[in-house]
Amino acid sequence: VLSAQTHSGGERSVSTIMYLMGLQNLMSSPFRCVDEINQGLDERNERLVFKRIVNNSTAPVDEGEAPNAHCGQYFLITPKLLPNLEGMENEEITVLFVFSGPFNFDSCLDWNVDKFIADKKRILAQRAQVDTGNSRGKKRRSR
Image (cartoon, rainbow, N blue to C red; front, side):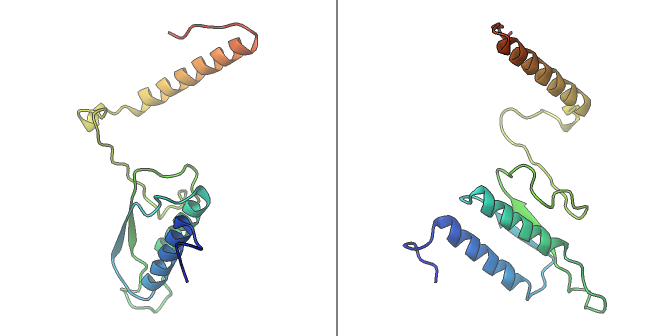
């Protein structure tokens, strides 16, 4: 029995999530939408829940089963995802990022991947140069 006195909020969340996913295996649905399912979870439990979502949404359908016996799609809406989650490399998984806020591009055509990568490499090279200079006892001013 889950109780506030015995279990942490994260433990209760994981138990509830796993229970609901178990129930979902008993019914067919074209998609499932979960909103901020990972909020309040520590890194270990967030990885556990995400792995279960990947397993649920990519499970193969047995031959001879009804056409609606598929596992359905999951839409996971969250303001953050941990890096290097297991399953992100699965070809059946598609990740869509929606950026909103005052620092976005005016047009999607303004996004330039080559420029982004070049800028990132330049910044990393500058940091490495500063770190190398600091390790020799020199201090450099940042521009």
